[in-house]
Length: 233
Image (cartoon, rainbow, N blue to C red):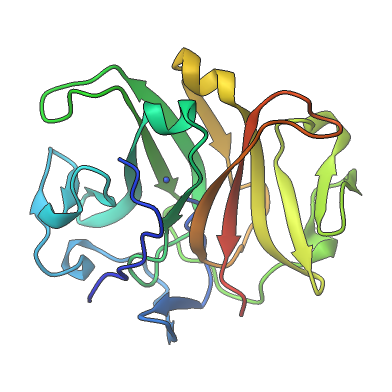
């Protein structure tokens, strides 16, 4: 199956969540109940390491496909640290193959550089759950207990502020999950993990958007708003 060629800003990340449909070449296609395997990866992928596969033309940014026991268990991107220092806005496609299950977490790991990539960078790895969910996408009533409305479209538990998760709700459907990350964390080389399985049955993800803000009311520090945009059924 061909990969979507939609990297809006090449800078040198993904909730991939479960649903019964997934975006493929701009159209909706039914997803299977089992997660995809190595045979479902895009044509031309090569083995990058023991568990990761990538199309050579997509190096060094990715996506890299994590494969274990013949199943796709994660997707990763490599983003240069300098982009975060410079306040670059980044969008990473996450609907790179159909039928991916929901995500457990996103791991943000700093590397000062290594063989094959000498520049300091972040490895964003989206670790997936083992099963593809079935049933209607969750809505406002499925949000965790104690959430309150933060803005017109975002809901959050007060104890989770300011980092999140924030749940984006439009038309009573959850169509996004967001976290707020201080720019200083990227400058300091912080290692962070973001839980994404706080609501079950979320639809598949289209993009992961890292939007920079120099600060605003309620959060004066420079930060990144990391939003996982979900497919709308």
